[in-house]
Amino acid sequence: MALDLLDGRSSVASALSMVRRRPLPFPPEPLRTAVIQLTRNRLAAADRHEGRRGLWLTALDRLGLGFDS
Image (cartoon, rainbow, N blue to C red; front, side):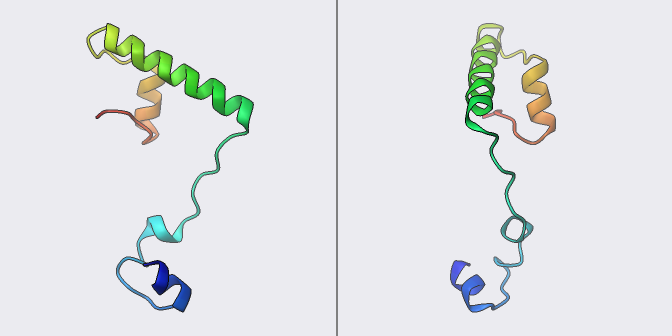
């Protein structure tokens, strides 16, 4: 896929939307650290409460950033 993009050739893999779109940028470091800590805390709380997810994890799920493994 990377070689197809470099050569300018069209292929099934290089036509995927995840290849053509730019990724969402990560937030600046202080905000990123706070969000990661909040998410880790909420995941631990969900584990303690038999998997019941709170508002934060539900919002992440709706944005497609869920941790439902």
